[in-house]
Amino acid sequence: MSDARVGLVIEDDHDIRELVRTVLTQAGFDVTVASTGAEGVLIAKHLNPDVITLDLGLPDIDGFEVSRQIREFSDAYIVMLTARTEELDTLIGLESGADDYLTKPFRPRELRARVAAMMRRPRSVPDATDTFSVEAAAEGHGHPERGNFSHNGLELSYASRTVVVDGKEMNLTRTEFELLHALLEAGRTVRTKADLVRRLRDEDYDVGSYISEADERSVEVHMGNLRKKLGDSPQQPRWLQTVRGVGYRLAPGEH
Ligand code: CA
Image (cartoon, rainbow, N blue to C red):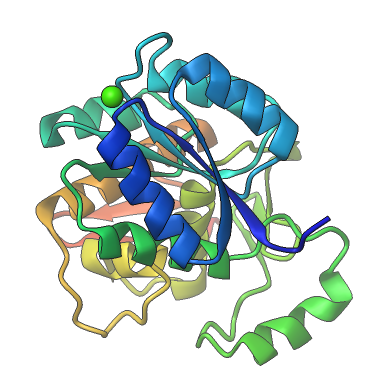
């Protein structure tokens, strides 16, 4: 068995498929491609990929359904490639299980940056409570407070990638997990949408990189999904407080 990370490209357009294959190969992945949804699901089952790029418009089954099927057995990082920006809200709202979305046409370096950021985040780390702080320190990404959080009946463990609310374990996507973690870490400090976009890219908050409206909108929609899953109320939040026109922060502690 090779140690190389495995990438899977599910895309019926030949040119895009080859472009994505090139990007992932250059990023160090062993890449396999599929040109239909059914083939993609089969290959995913067989290869257990780390990253999957998934075209929304496939000739047999659409990207949502492919993502849902893959999610039944895989925690691969799924990037959905979509044709039009205006679809984005709908897409993210559909809880397809994808972690990220890119609108075509996209710049190769955009895809490369997202994949790189994602690979720096741990996948679920089994039983790593003891070694975690050491790893986090060695990682040196400037997130010294990664660890365990407890707030208003919600418990998050970064090491085991789990979130428990009132004793019930939540099933969050990686993106939702990262957003929740970012707010817990920040406490009552407001995180702007741009901050959160950068966080998802694993950049420092003040790095000044370009953030588009679609990026910010995507954070809003992910937050909406997160709120739904947690059963949180926008009006009387237990955890996710919206700071209108700015961003989000953690709701005050209950007494
Ligand atoms: Ca297509």
